[in-house]
Amino acid sequence: MMSETVDEALEGLCREFLATPYLFYTEQGLHAMFFCMLFNRLSPEERYSLLGDKKVSVVQKEYPTSHKLKDSRRGHWDISILEDPLIPIRSPDYDFLKVNSAVEFGLNESIRHLKGDIKRLTANESNVANKFLAHFYRLSESESHRDWNPRSRRIATPGEVFDEVKGTDVIAYYAIADQTRGLRRACRITSSGIRGLESEL
Image (tube, rainbow, N blue to C red; front, side, top):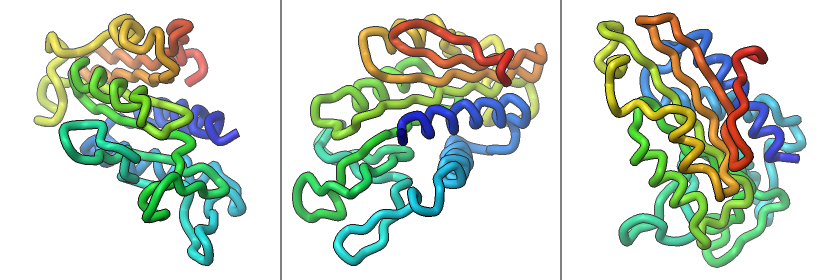
């Protein structure tokens, strides 16, 4: 199943992030790495589908939401996996294909950002069957201006992420790499609870 492949790729991304947190400079770097990891997990036959006579990658970056989920405009999913065979839900077909899975990312973002992602993913009009979050923190005191200070009060805990996820069908991956304390932690968080991944990573 495609959702299981996404799940496996997100665990792989956690592993990569904890081992080499500076491999990605920005959140967009995380998107690019995940796109590559997910695409490479698919067999050649799974990577593409046809919309009429047009070849389409099932893995998409910034594919638009099917409805206006934020403000008065359509949004875009960070990474989405289109349903195969491709299923248009309205016209024009290429702009409104059914989404099998969507992943929303956050790198050094507050719980408010995560709440917004959950709200979009779980909206009735989201057009997404399988909903995923990747919420990562990279902490240091001087490595990069993009890092957060480990004493920041904006850092969410796995428990706080669980409080937002419970009661939904969202699967969240949480990872934190703290350069000051040598802390590396990752977990998979669902409505059922928190499963630590450190022993598996």
